[in-house]
Amino acid sequence: MESIDAQIERIISLDPGGRGVGSLLVAGDLAAAADELMRARRVWILTGFVIPALKTGETDGPPGAISLASGLLRLGIPTTIVTDPLNGVIMDRAGLSEVEFPLPELWRKERPTHVVAIERPGRAMDGRFHTMDGKVISQEDEVACLFDRASAEEGIVTIGIGDGGNEIGMGKVFERVVRSIPHGERIASVVSADRLIVAGTSNWGGWGLLASLSIRARNDLLPTDEVARDDVTRFVAAGGVDGRTGRSEGSVDGLGMDEYLAVLRELRMLINDSRATESMD
Ligand code: MG
Ligand code: MG
Image (cartoon, rainbow, N blue to C red; front, side, top):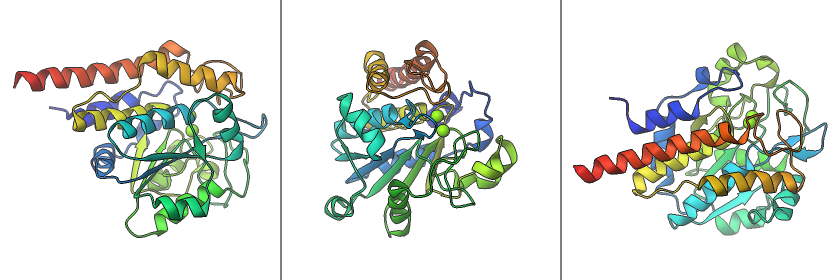
């Protein structure tokens, strides 16, 4: 029988955008990431993707980071969300969650044991960062440097969550991105992670990881539909946009709210079923 983690991987890798994300999946990495996170003492979550033409942040990333952070906090694991100033202003204005910037003093003080990057641009072969369609985002990025530092330091577990091949963590499947994703040779990120979670949209990857944690903790850590919807609408009201359409609308990667939340409902059903089965044993 298919394991619960494999079922979660299947649910979140639904590919509405037809980007070919299924071919990037690393089977078993979701389970390993959840096992490792259960032992975390301090987690940093890096997020935020800036749309260069619009100079604002997109709705994929921060909502997933917020869901993941609140789940980890419920497990008693201190968690810090770190982003760039542009996304920081939006999240702050939206009253969504407190965010920090990649400050070396804070890093030394908190000493994270686990660093998760969710929908965060990853450096490509040419040393630059790219959008899905191959546009250059920027050359300098402190958040990216922070992830490099986590990878270089002994004993820190790194986890990447992405949906397109151009994000931090996708270096783990670099060759596959080059082969199967449009503009792959230009956008493929060379930045790898210990564990890579691939999803149809990165927020789903955050929920998938939460679902795997929920199974392990025997506690439903997923956000409610209302909270998940609210995270997106508030981010948009504060100036964020859908990264796919570029429009200021309550959608994620072009997915309307119903389609977006359908994955959350499926994950919740899976958790509840597994708990019901467990209580019958
Ligand atoms: Mg992406
Ligand atoms: Mg996305």
